[in-house]
Image (cartoon, rainbow, N blue to C red; front, side, top):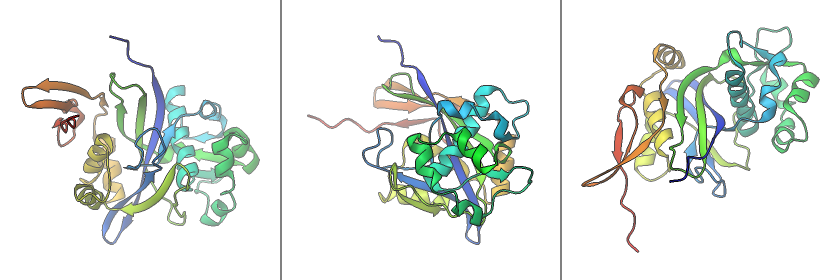
Length: 262
């Protein structure tokens, strides 16, 4: 047996808003050529970049956080900006998040940050912005199973979408986007309208237990964070994908579809 490959740190954000129909979350459809979760409905996010650990001077709410945690939060905010155009940041000296009007003037930075032509540190210094790490709430922690050829160590965060920020997919890694109630996302996955992979589905199910943004934050704050590392078990009736019961999800195991016969 070969040793498991090293994990890559990653961060993803459940961007939330309250509506008259209930809590909604912003989700994107991955491009079919992306090497992870291609074509699936997912939360915006991605790998943490080296530059995410170099902007602590431009962060708020990082007291008592270690370097790894700060890089994860920064990565979540940066990825949200690059992938859906929402930026959790404040002008230097302000207690308010940037306005939608200010945000519109910053949209051209999304591609530049993504392709590396502008570093995050350069962007924040030039525009005199501070990342609102204190606007994030840890929601879940998942690590790709050891038998997989590519592995991610991913933190899921909750964030309340600023009311005047318009979320829109980037057209590159993501080809479609939707604000959707968690219950509706689950229904449409069951009907075949969307593909939702196992970790995303379980987190959507967990989010569906909340009726408002405040409720979701409160539940996450009061829930013990368990690092979920799925594994498989072969049984008489097939192979099961399993997670720890202590993680607090509705299920802790699921029978995997049988491989098609050749």
